[in-house]
Length: 308
Image 1 (cartoon, rainbow, N blue to C red):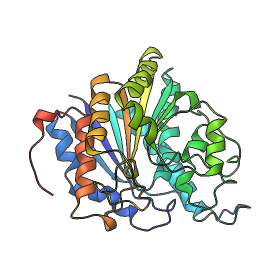
Image 2: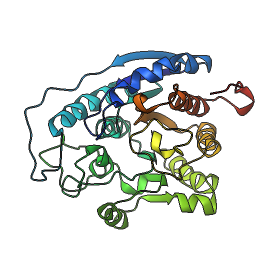
Image 3: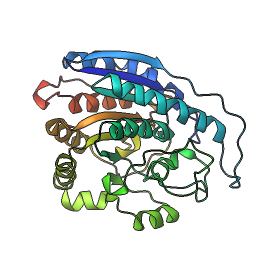
Image 4: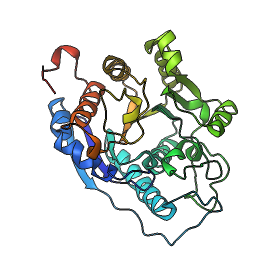
């Protein structure tokens, strides 16, 4: 029996709206543990972690807020992610805003480096989150994780020391549809494989995702999936503070998860940006749990009928 660890990360310091700290418990209330267990996994819920205590930290970019808190979360999450992936077949990190990936991905990348395997990342998001501390104008640090864990300049001496950066060539982004000018510049200067919603409209999901997964397989790599609620169309997933129209449909999102299940390459997962305060009778939390179930083996014919 495979082991799955649930790690709660009630972080909201990286976002502009409060409410993401309720995300981990909303997933639990929506039955995430029971759902995964029904698919044959042994599930260990490790509870919610706490951030490290960090001395007040300032930056020349005065728009940045909650910098010390975010650094404290990053330090705690890096260690928690490393320990979780060492001791389980699939750790699932329950957010919390997307700044949690400042910690989770370096933690799992450390383990990949120690086992001699390449780390790959599938980034499912409306935003590329590739701002540096210098380029962010909102000051929302959930917009910085990709720039940080790929080793871009500007984080030295502020964020935790990055020992195992993820190669930009090992990242695939899908669902992108909201990009700031500075982020566009960063993307044009690196090798990240970006599929915005127009590309998905024109070419579909299966072909570009399959091409990326073939690369992961040929490299004998390990794959982390980071799923942001705003990857989805807001009409089906309203519980996020950064809604962007034109997101993935119900079937597109499930197709991605089903393809990922079939490939057998996924070794860790982020579920981020769920803000239950903005939800409608828990429908977004339930959808995210259903997507996780598709990733872990639930088939279309196994899905029960239910109304929202």
